[in-house]
Image 1: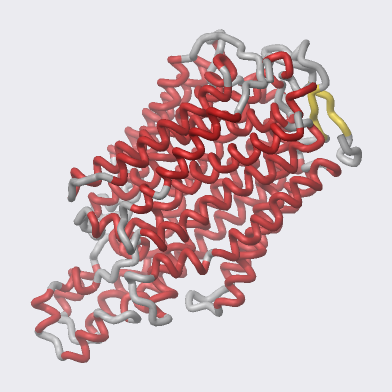
Image 2: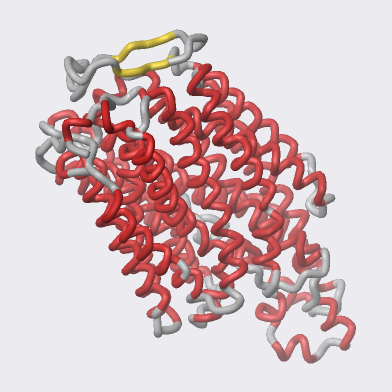
Length: 585
């Protein structure tokens, strides 16, 4: 294979090579997305393993950065790493990503420290792991797009994208399965797979694109990174209590952080409009299919990210304990009970990607988002203590809807890009997706906290008094910040014994002690307040999906590039040709 085969001609579509590219990049995407979620379910065991108290509001910093630090760094770097792939070779940057990812996974597995030091070690190497993941995510889609002809990209990108989306949920099961054995296994499992993927990629992948040397937009990188990091720090303080408020979004610190993030983002846009070779190729937004496809990606990721957190809290903190499961086994069972969502995605993703190659993306992507909104609406009608078959059916329908959207949408976005901009354009699309997951954390946690704050203190105080706790002590416990109770549910912890203290419990009759520390009391106590926040959060997800459906509908006809020359002003390669959706390419 040589650079002469780039731009979608000749050997770049060699039958054997394209399947090698698909299988290797799909393995990479699975690893990169799996590690974005594997810590969610494993968090209870990680916190116990490094002896970190989940009920201290200040420890929410470590929890959020262990989960979201990986997503933040991929969001910050993915476009520039895609650009580096365009400049120096996509396969080179991709292969480097495998190496960085594997080394960071090994370092995470050998953390020997405990407490805040151990947590900080994990946060740092999660960020390093994110650098490797960003190299993989930034270039895998471009490698696939180079290897497959336009009339097969929907199928190829559909498989790749759905395995990636499914990896977010497969990670939940692996985290629940491995973490109870040893929390280090959630990181160690990636090492042998990463070594295999690294060797395979170095031996088998070839450069089909023509490297286009240029310069890196350092100021764009710095201003964008600063904006995203400041926003993330604002989230960590915004969901903590401040003064008499259950959240800190009105605090001077959070307002200052958000203001600085906004200034940095404005500076980023100004830099991108003036620099010769920008990080974000703003002229790409002149391509209608790219603009509305990317907007749809952003909104769908906000809804999907919120769904994951809501389901974990719902299952681990309430439903499973109410049904007799111990808090220590709830994470694994929660991951298994969410399998219908993954199955739905795996069924619909490749099928819709294949069909969109023939009939166009707009109908599938728009219908998928309408279906996702319908599934969120159905979830709002479920009682907190639901019937599992009904819950599983709704999850399956949601997975089918998300899969029906994701594959055609990704293929349409990539097909709309000039060959020389596939790395940067694919990275821009992935940046919006990852940033949306970071934003969704702040939005959904805030909505839940506000919902809990409205009724949790009264429910907790009266519930404790009814079981013999003195009014003063019950009131003190009832004033526990909602974020602490929410994280307890998220981490599968029963906080009652911790909050009351051993001495207070010892003074109670044996029966009262058993009730307060049993499976049912805490989940029954928070189920009502939790339901209030849940309905608000799902309502927001419905709105996000419906706006995504409208954006998808506005993408226009199918866009393809017919020649590698004469790009629109400011775009580096061939002209865009819009086809009617009713015609196959």
